[in-house]
Length: 211
Image 1 (cartoon, rainbow, N blue to C red):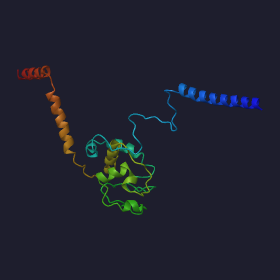
Image 2 (image 1 turned 180 degrees about the vertical axis):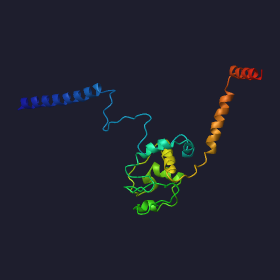
Image 3 (image 1 turned 90 degrees about the horizontal axis):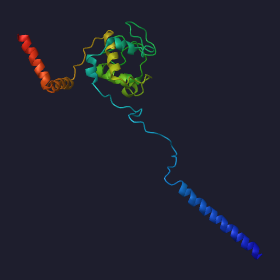
Image 4 (image 1 turned 180 degrees about the horizontal axis):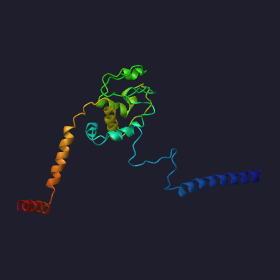
């Protein structure tokens, strides 16, 4: 009986020693190593979330000054599945857009506009049309319009001048004064940065012209 107890004791002690060795060796061999996170992912520099951000660059008023009607017609191709734009054209999934610029929201007779859009006050001017084309759902929450919007301000400007040329002819908004002043300042800075050699060259050309 005594021998059996002694053997059992040695077996138990051996098990405890083995468990302790396993813990110590595990800590030693994993030292300095990072555990794999539960959620894998990597940050990509320069990529923003899909929530979007405000447009950077020239304002829509500035872009409208040089917008291209032909380019706008190409952009309208994205709208053509739902809209016609010819004079007297039929309504489709969306209303006919002939002479829509300057008209009230929901002006096409016989088309079933959503209450969300009909409740928006005012007319389709440059500001409201730009906001609508940026995000119809944000402009008129609850609208039946499923188009997500045009993210590029240049596309919106080109499309608006094309729409305006189809029976509307609203005057373009005035170009922003601040942006004109910035352009003038950049030109003045470029002149001031001209080196002595460039100034001498201009003077020589001027003298030659006088001769």
